[in-house]
Amino acid sequence: MRVRHAQVEDELNSLHTAASADGSGQPQQQYQSGSQSAVMRLAALSKELAELSELVDLIEELEKHRADVRFLEDTAKGDPDPEMAAMAKEDVASARNAVVALEERVLRRLLPKDAEDDDRGVILEVRAGTGGDEASLFAGEVFGMYERFAAAQKWRFEILSASKNEFGGLKEAAAAVQGHLAYPALKFESGVHRVQRVPVNDSRLHTSAATVAVLPEPQEVDFKLDTRDLKFDVYRASGAGGQHVNTTESAVRVTHVPSGIVVAIQDERSQHKNKDKAIKILRARVYEREQARAMAAQASTRKSQVGSGDRSERIRTYNFAQDRVTDHRISLSKHGIDRMMGGELLKEFSEALQSAEEAEKLRQLLKGEV
Image (cartoon, rainbow, N blue to C red; front, side, top):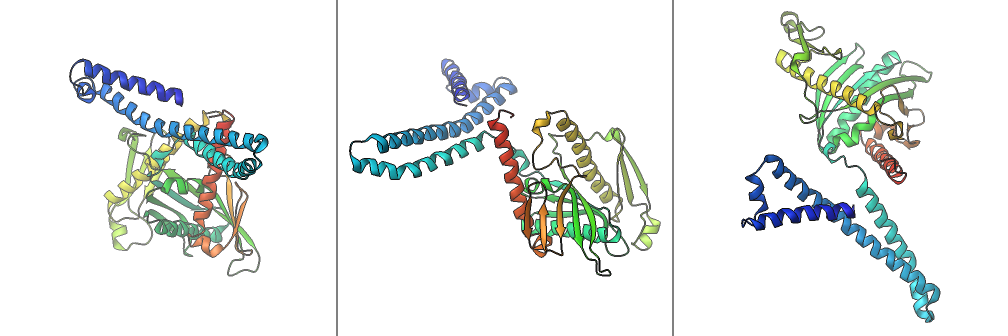
């Protein structure tokens, strides 16, 4: 990083020198009169230098503290003045702690940055899994848990579709979640959520499940859905909705022909609104598919210890009888089912999973795998 810092400084200095030679003294003006790529190069170098300068300053501070530790250790061992040796011995521990703290800060700054994901929205999908009616009831509770969690974080939670059964349970539902740090907080929720409890009309312990998929909303710079690859079908919606449902073709089915992915929405009375919602979900699913292909092509050592995010992977168990929630990826258990389903305890699990991911990235960095 220090070598790169010096290289960037030299390149920027050469740009300023060239600008001074032509008498303008303004490298930005010189580049604006040239190619757009040159302007972008100048801006990129300036940004890189600012980021590297912070890290280099931190490294220099670390080396200063390391030198202080060596001085204190030498003084404590060999200073002829007993009083000075005793004082140095007292200060060694705090000086070592300062070095450890600075080393951690430097390492974290060296980790690959995902800042562009901080404000990325997500498409959240919840489906009832194995377990019949009990599974659909649990799916509805899980979907509500995310809605309450989003409200507590002051995120926007827009329900895109919801399909319920006759018992009030949820067969499947999707929502768009928008807000700062929404994606980092929710990205580990993909997988199978298992529930263990005694249903109201039974005396035996039942096990059922709901599956969750968290799809990052693609940005235009990431991915563009080609409309030529889409097939649209409109039809009359079914289910509750009165006369309008029976007379208007407002339901929309969108098929991504190359991948075969299909999304159907009939929640809104407006065909246009249903089409917009369907495309939003479809874009996220196709983008996720492309991301999964790219990740599969990478080395297996890149797989995080907190799980692959596969929807078929059992990630968490909600044990109502013992008032306990367990995340199997990081072996973390917490009591408080009501707090969990209310969206409150979910933040603690999210933070623990993010810390586990960071620890794994640090391990890979130290082993040279990154």
